[in-house]
Length: 66
Image 1: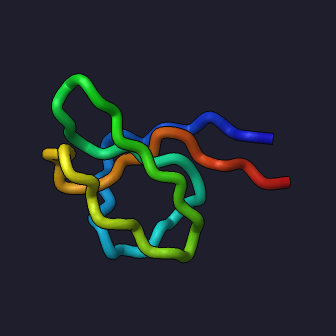
Image 2 (image 1 turned 90 degrees about the horizontal axis):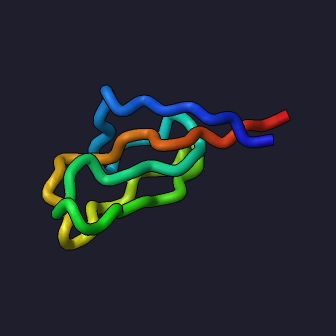
């Protein structure tokens, strides 16, 4: 079951270890596009996509585990 959790106050930088599995959104953008990445706890955050003007990723929705 998925747990809805958002933490848009903490920015995770590319190359850092993912603390919580879930969907992360680029902290920035051009206003017309949303850049998202599904990341797994313990893996590293990917580079920011072209078009993302932010400095990292913010947690949009955590993946819940039973």
